View 1 (tube, rainbow, N blue to C red):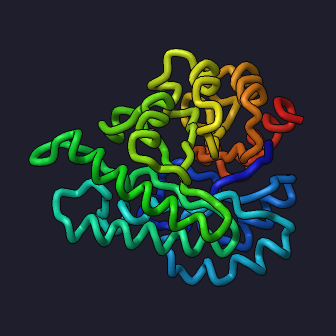
View 2 (view 1 turned 120 degrees about the vertical axis):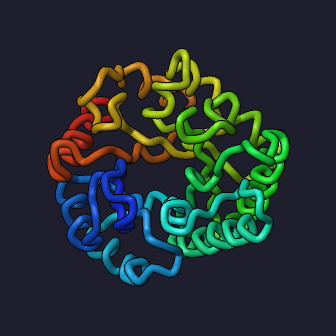
Length: 270
């Protein structure tokens, strides 16, 4: 398993669960100095100017790109893959597809989280899941050309009413025929939705492609009541070799949050 830390470049998401904010070069340098293997970037869009600088920044700091988030599609543009308006759904799919292309240039996956949306009003759960499944299957296949996959994230019940658990995520991907998509196991969401997090991870063997390494409080590891030892043991049991990426609030500040994360990673994994 490898370590990663999040960098948000989206001003509209200020206050969200990202360790570093802005200054892609400076944040990447700070991550490298602490010993992280990679960064996970949340750009304002797939054509963001910062992404043009990313290749040299990663090379200068000997970092990899763990993943690229699509959350700005919702935060900035209110696009979701389950919106009742077909034109909006089409724009959402195009936004994610372009992000897949941007991430794919680095051999990295894109993440669908908040852009999945929710069902309600004039859209039934079955219809919303159908639209979402079609999009995830198509976009996953689009990622295949880059030698990577698409990441789909089950969220807690307060953020979506579509898919909330790892087991439901496995069933969703299987039902959609999304052969080149994997699940993001976010320990914050799992703390809310799973009866037993290690058991849920073991049940998701083969389907988990990314992990958000964060405590129950959405602060960095060690700032809540999560027992990480059995969780990392479960990840080892299923042969997980991807990233443990800190999508966490910068508590008490970015420097301290990043340091707490890398120290927890070294203690539990290495």
